[in-house]
Length: 199
Image 1 (cartoon, one colour):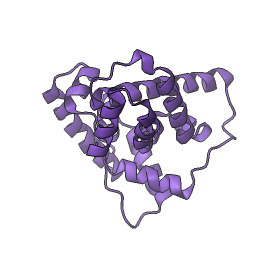
Image 2 (cartoon, rainbow, N blue to C red):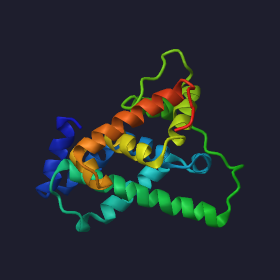
Image 3 (cartoon, rainbow, N blue to C red):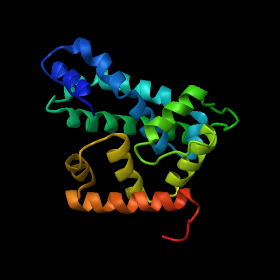
Image 4 (tube, one colour):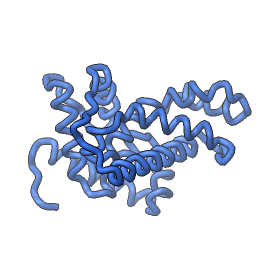
């Protein structure tokens, strides 16, 4: 996160709640990417990650009295945990309702470009590929990763949490997180170029 984000957080921590919309907006693209990656392929057809991110922001604003403003990284970790809770509720809803996947959410060209920009923290998209094809290829590869690989990539590269925070969330040492991330990125790269194999 850049200095502007840290400054917004510092103002919020010091009691200036007027900056909260700007603080949340600064994380909007990462939230959308994070939520989309953690959605099942079926849920991506039924729910807009942008809508899920807006729901997360509403929940964050409504729950601020339960958050202790310590540092910017703790805030991001808490916000992305709230995002997972929103996502789990929507997945349960669609599972219980057995919703018809005929209602499909279409990404706009601007949303596709924004997602690709967010995903560049994980992989460098081809300049020659169409955005929709590149997104589908990346997300299909990500879906094939084991859960711990998905988690370490999304927390470090999409949520941009420090390794110390990721280690705490994942209940591992920082070195174990670094090793896991290295293996996860290597496996993702293999899947992206079509060398699936068994792992």
